[in-house]
Image 1 (cartoon, rainbow, N blue to C red):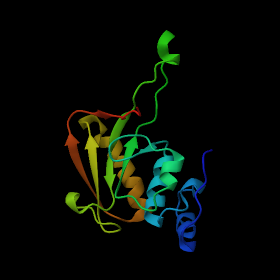
Image 2 (cartoon, helix red, strand yellow):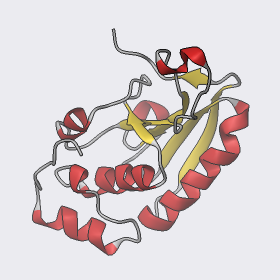
Image 3 (cartoon, rainbow, N blue to C red):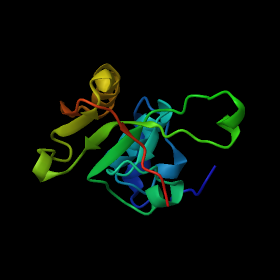
Amino acid sequence: MGQTCRAAAAGDTDYIGQSAVPADARYTSLTATTALVLGTLHHKGYDIADTGGRKMTDEEICAVETADGVGILKPNTPRSGFLSYWVRSRRRLLGTLWLDCAERGAVLDREWVMEVYGEDNIKEAEHIIGDLLDQAHVPVLVRLASKKPRFEETRL
């Protein structure tokens, strides 16, 4: 499935392998922290987006070693009906997890910030944060960035 990233540092895959989240071979070239976050999200069924909400391909994910933040796309819900074969619905952008962004108060490996889009996404975001906290042991501040939900940005 997609491109496999090469390990950038020997300790990266070992760190992921020691966590309860299975190592995802696609993310082994990333820093340990970024790989842990992406692996956890992928394991939970979420897709990775950039901070603007556009789904990232495996190749795009492999091209970065560390991320200041990642968008979290909710899984696609199957559609039924005549046009469902041709029309693809945009997924909800659950939020953006900032790992290292001074403007938002996130400091890598010290404190992260989760901006949630839509009041109805807060509980789901808290479950994700709980899983990440169990794995990374980094406190996460949850903020409601907008009361209304945001949706996946599409490629032109």
